[in-house]
Structures are given as structure tokens and as C-alpha cells.
Image (cartoon, rainbow, N blue to C red; front, side, top):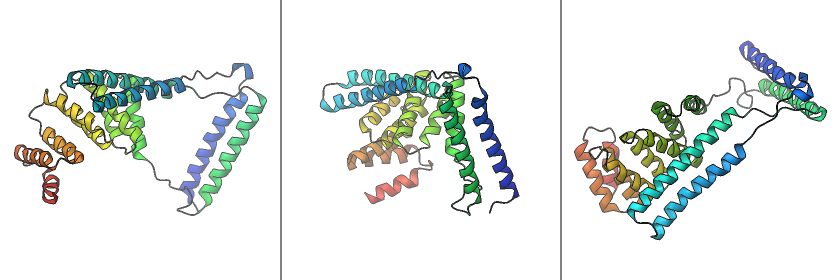
Length: 275
């Protein structure tokens, strides 16, 4: 059974749910705000932008794009994906919840609120680990929400964009990694000489299996940070993922030589020993 503190939390939750449910019930039907929702349209645009990005990679593999054309087309596709991601995230934050204006909708809302309150009571009464007393918080979700709020407040702030990218990079789903890539592309557009942004973008591409994209990103990074130890480190990982053992070994040995005190050296030495 929950203790006194948990019961107080339950009371506050139910009271809050009551306010949320009661407010639209008390609003006159002709004054209920209407939803202006472009989220579906923006989600479609973002999916199309991601599809275009994948098409660029397909064209590269098919041999229809040479190196220069590939870099230009990919940069354009990445920028478009970054723009659609920003518009989609902004719409998701700004779009108000739909309000009910009919008697049937209000009755459904009241029934739903009652059901939620009942489920909360049951969930708090059940013993752990079935119950929700002292629920485990999701710090990663909080981090993304906080970073997204700062990003939407100023999407031209490099630090806000970088923090948003890091928040998504902490995830492990394809959607999170794609969002991280879009944020890092935007960061590179804001700071073309930001070596860390290139390294993180290549890492995200490597994690999603986009080896051609990672290679292109590292080539661009080489023009602004040729002496960065991240270059041979990541190039070695890309070569290893491609199955090119000789190239991977050469890049890893270069990495150890230029950054012998890097904390990643033991990991690379272990990979070399395995090979």
C-alpha cells in the first residue's frame, strides 16, 4: 500500500485531472477553441525529406552521382530535412489540444476523466512493482523536452541546437538518431568549422548503418579539422563496419599514434587484438 506521501501525490494528481476535465465542460459550446493542426502535413513533409535523403544515397550507390555532385545534393537534402524537422517540432509544441463543443463530446470527456481517476486509484493501491507508487522517471525524455524548449525559443542558438542533438543522440531508436542528424546538420550550417558537430553526425550515421553518409561527413570534416583524432578513429570504425580490415587497422594505428592518451585507446587496442 502507498504511504502518506504517495497518497498526497495521488490527491494532487486527481485534483489536477479534475481541473483539466472540468474546464472544457464549463466552457460555452460556441467559445470552445478549434484545433489548427498542421502536424500531419508537416510529418508527411519530414518523411518526404528523409526519403529524399535516402534517395541520394541510393543514387550514389547506383553510380549516378559523382563525388562533387553527391556532396552538393546530400548537403541540400540534409538542410531540407533539418528545416522540416524544426517545423514539425515547433508545430507539436505550439498546436493546442482540441476542445469539445458538443454534448456527446463533453460526456465522453467526463467519462474518460472518471475512468482515469479510477485507474490511478487502483494503480496506487496495488503493491510494487505492479503499482505506480514512486514511478521511475525518464530522465532522457525530460532532457529532450528541455532541449526542445530551448531550441524552439531560439533555433539559431548553436548551443541550443547542439544540446538538442545530444539529447537525441542519447536515444537508440532510428527516429531519435535521424532527429539528431537533422539537428547536427543545422548546427553545421550555423558553425561550418565545428569539428565536434561533424564527428557526432558521422557517429549517428554510423549507428544507423549509413556508411556512405558517414564517409561523406568525415571527408567534409577533414577540410576543417584535418588534425582531429576523431577522424582516424571514426574512419577506422567505418572501415571495420565495411569489412575492410586493413584500412581499419591503418586508421586505428594512426589514431593511437596521434592521440596516445585518449580514453578510447584501450577500446581500439582491444579491437586490434581481436583482428
